[in-house]
Image (cartoon, rainbow, N blue to C red; front, top):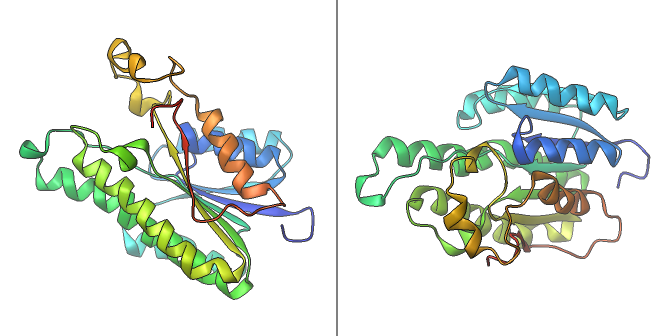
Length: 243
């Protein structure tokens, strides 16, 4: 992408689950990695070792993406001297409950992390990509943002918001040779889905199984690394046929 063999990818929320699978596969594709995490230092260090075992470098940054000052303090010094070839926005949380009983805190936490965190971390990087006139941005949304999900009004709203943001951003930056897309996973085997009742969920999935983080990461890596690219402003579902 840069005209050399040295490429860099930043993964926002890269220490566990889908983000960590993205980190592994991007490293295997030749990217040096910067990953962010909120608090699980052990997981971040493990991910870093996996990247280094693949022969690439890895930098870890710990901060709360919902905190605008903390995000700026972590990212803006780096952006003074570098800009990633690819940026993956993966960080998210869920606070599930029926809407009528949802607390303001449950709403604010999910919107603040999933949607405001996107603004806090992606906007400064996109600004630098525009100046450089190249880049790849992949945002991890969810099938919940496409179809809605009972008990997830806050989560579905945040994930649908990401889809709208990417579609608008794609219209803004396409002429600058910046490719912007959404990957929308279905039910993926991560900590977030560990408590789901499989006997009720599996009949809804035509492939009759949960997806894996690696299957999501494969699509993300394609969007970040493929040199022959005409995919832009799209929502790519990785959901086993659920939607």
